[in-house]
Amino acid sequence: MLKEFIEHIQRTTQPQITTIGSSTFAVNADGGANEIRPAIDCPDTLFLNSLDALVKLVQTEAVNVERPLYITVPDHLTVRCFGSPQANGRYIRQTYYTANATDVPGWGEKVQLGFEEAQIALRTRFQETADTLYAMKLLSDISCGAKVIYNDNGIATTVTTQKGVALQTNEQIRPLIKLKPYRTFQEVEQPESIFLIRLTDRGIVFTEADGGMWKLKARETVSLFLVDRLKSEVDAGQVIVAL
Image (cartoon, rainbow, N blue to C red; front, side, top):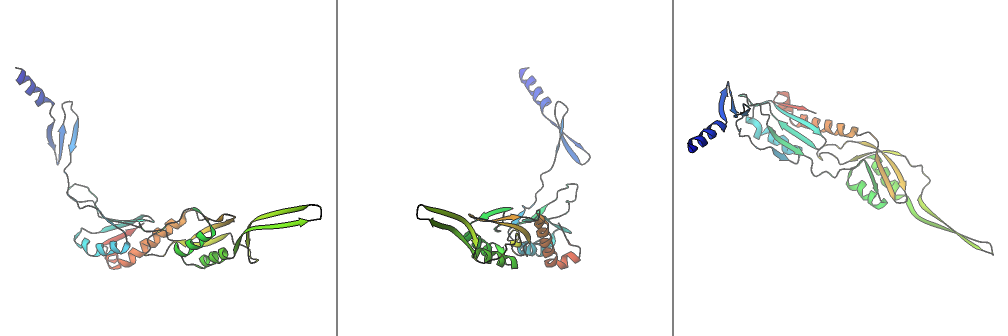
């Protein structure tokens, strides 16, 4: 009797598998139901480090993928390529490729550097513009040090020390300049930003002054690059590029 009782409890507590339409459910003893969804084999998302790799894979490897393909630029460092939801009621949107700009130096909203460090940064972390050359000339004209003035009236000697930053030429400093730091995929033209510059005795401060609008410009530039490189696919309606 004990064995039969245990077997009865096991039978009544195990979930019952029920099929309703095209869906399968596991119904518990308390009446609760959980849908059993099939495990679908899908290729892993391929992570890339350049726009060129994304373009070539779309043109070659993805030729047999159901079209159209969608390419979006969610931010200035990321591009995603995915397809429509798969058929047969599975509703899985497969992301085939994701390109990330992982090797971009970047530039913060507010950066303070010493004069020598700023000179190096302007040469290595920016695309050259007229204002980049202006900023480098400005830094080369700066002298930083102390000025000591002695005053001896025969009775007592006074010493006055003045410290600070001075320009070697009589020139008014422009407070706003336009620069192009490397902040998105290096295959495209870098977005230009307005920066407010301030000089201190410790160096120069660059403060972003465009409200982050450069991020939208970067996304638009990447989008136009992809449309140009995938022109035949876009014109045929096989690839759709969007922000």
